[in-house]
Length: 215
Image (cartoon, rainbow, N blue to C red; front, side, top):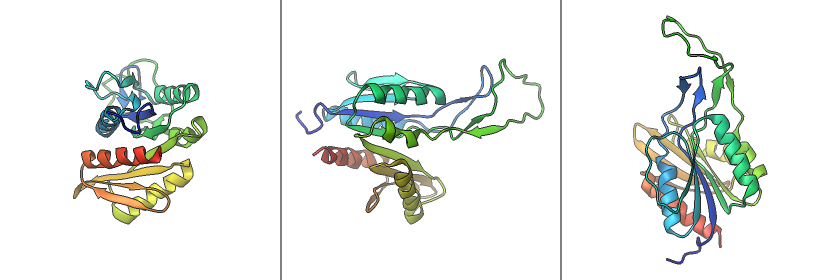
């Protein structure tokens, strides 16, 4: 099926990231990668050449024409993105992975004993990967995600616009999953579309916007 996404290169990140504690334990988050995986499938069916950089989500079934690059840890994702975006030009980059904001200040070189009654860890902030993407891929249509489970409506949109300005994005998806269920908005510096009440509805509208952005 011929569409204006034929031949377009699109890179998507999805899923959680791990931060190691010791040789066997990690700290992670509850991201499923569902939105990024669904978006990859939809865009690939519309003719795009999709690369999906996917965190540890367990088994994942995607179309054969989607290139999947797996990662587990924050440093892996950071290195993969830098390498991939510097060696290949992408028309769009969609950064939906839930990146660890903090990691342990030090990682134990062996498994910590399970007999410790109180285990204290000191954390340090991780670098903001999204702030580097424009430098790595200056000509791409760049989409970021802002997830805030305790915000909605105008407050959430305001946070998304702050992210757009800081990271020089073309678009941000502001999403939440509070007591009223899933809600998402597509936001740029001037306008916002939404709310969308399901990931499927968001992906449908986001894929249409990406097609139009290429015209």
